[in-house]
Image (cartoon, rainbow, N blue to C red; front, side):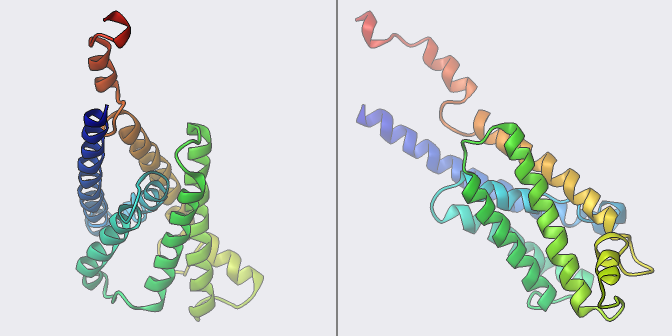
Length: 209
């Protein structure tokens, strides 16, 4: 019994190492895509990753995996966008990620797929409202009125991609990647997966001895 528990712990440890590698690669690659395809701006797994890690990963991995992915990709990518990591907007963005990570921890792993999808939608909406509201506060292009805030949330700054397109891409990508990560964790890279259940079904039970 102890040997079985030890083997399971080793499997979980290896699975979590696999997760952190996959997450770093996934987030890093996805954030390069908009450089060649501007229509895919904000189509990123970043929000889903923070939600997923808060809910599913344990120990230091549940915050280190998404944070490492974001920090590494920002350090490498920000020069391409003419930004530095410690700009106020980047810090607000990081704060939004942490809020979504906390939402994931609050949700946990016991939620059904419908509730999990709702959490992904809420994550995208929170991120959009926080970052666009901050842009409204600091950007002189926006009137500091309710109509100016509405413009920041919907149309964005004149001459740039409309904010509602960012929200659309964020909603679609967050729901898509959140469901993919949940499915992968539940059925591919954890103990008790379909493959392991099938294998155990061919092993004799204690009652047969």
